[in-house]
Every structure is written in structure tokens, then in C-alpha cells.
Length: 265
Ligand code: ADP
Image: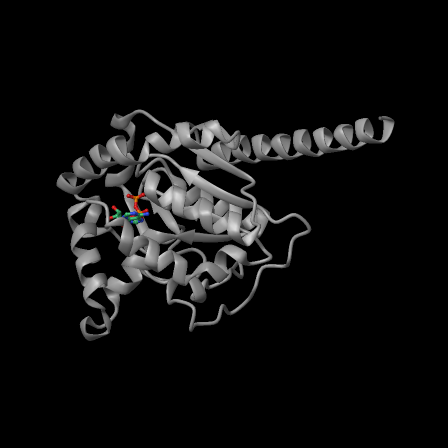
């Protein structure tokens, strides 16, 4: 069984303490994963977390965790947010941003982060940029996963999630060793409410309209890495990892040659 950070500070909010903290990294990985619902961002985030140690921060997981808590513990804003989520619509920017800002210590964590499901609109991306600039945090890269919509629908229909550690499986593509049970923590696997066909359609349309403009936003900032989300999860992961490493090597080489040029002047 792999020991994973329980991400309590992210899932439950800043008053909770994470069970373990990722080792501080010399240069922490600070990543954003983009791509339509169902391209496998959650699966890749988990694989990236195992290799890079940075925490998997999913906004969807925060909403789902709040949804499983007692009704009386949910703020009016959270109750409203859960309604949007069930219909497959986006939660309003102000609610999402209040939730992320409250958890900014996770963005500042010396182990880095892998954001999954956030930002999802240009307004969210701009708020995040402002906060990161103010805190002196630099994005390592934004990975954009692409896949034809037909394939996405198949993936979403077969997706199962662990109710305890949130690990993601697929009934045929990535089945657990024991049916209905998580390989890592033995938690029960469930099908998400918003993976029903009518919600899937709304989510894909919303993605096209609100989230796909972020690809251009990050391309213009020179941080975009493009990955075709085809093949096995391990193939996609290797492609992602190779491209991320190559990007980092290029940046180090550029800094070294710039420093050498400075010395020669
Ligand atoms: P998906 O599989 O659709 O990528 P997520 O787990 O990221 O799912 O999110 C599930 C739902 O939570 C979304 O459909 C949306 O209702 C809500 N949500 C999560 N993150 C955001 C966000 N950044 N902005 C608005 N709504 C969000």
C-alpha cells in the first residue's frame, strides 16, 4: 500500500492538518492540469503526485467532500455550489475563488502542487495569477490533455472513484484488483452523480465555452505543454513526465547561457 498525503488542509480547509507533508523540493513542481472532464486529469494527477511528490489539489474533490458531510455543516454558499455541481454546471467564480483563497497555504506548500479542475474560467485564472505573483510563486507548467469527445463519454461512464482517498479507476481500462474496492486504502468505489449522461453533456458544453479559452491564456504565457490523452494511463503519464522534464532542462540551460552571456559583457 502506498502512503499518500491525506490532503486534509485542502479537502477540509485550513483548520485541518495534513497527516504527512511532501518533502520540500529544491524546485517544487507547480502544475495546472487542463482538459475536458473525463480526459483523465485525476488519474494523471495521481501518477504525477507519486513521481513528483507535489500534492494533488482537486476543487471537485473539495466540493464532493463537502457534499458528503452533514447538511447542517454546509454553508449556504456550499449548498448552492453543490446544486450547480449535480447539474454538471460550473460553480460561480466568487464561491470557487473564496474556497481556493482560503486554502492558499496549499499553493505555498514547499512540496509544490498539481491543480486539477482549477482554474476553469478566465476570471479564476486571473485571480490565481494575481495571488501567485503576490506570493512570488512561479508556475512550472500547464499541461493540456486533449481527447475526442466520443472517447470522453465512454471514459466518464465507466469511471469509479474511491470514497476515501479519491483514487480514480475505470471498470474496463483501469480496474481495481478487487471489484468495487480501492487498491490503495481498501475504500469503497462509487460512481459520481455528475457522470450520468445528462450531466456529462452539460459538462462538455460548459468546458468548450468557459474552460477551453484558458489554453490560449497559458500558451501566451509560454507555460503550456500539450499531451494527447490517448493510450494507457501509464503511456500518457510517461509522455507528460518526459515533456515536463524537457521543459525544465530547457529553462535551466537558458538560465545558464544567459548568466554566461552576462559575465562575458
Ligand atoms: P470533472 O470530471 O468535470 O473535471 P471535477 O471533479 O473537477 O470534475 O469537478 C466536478 C464539478 O465541481 C464541476 O462539474 C463543477 O460543478 C464543480 N467545480 C469544480 N471545480 C470548479 C471550478 N474551478 N469552477 C467551477 N466549478 C467547479
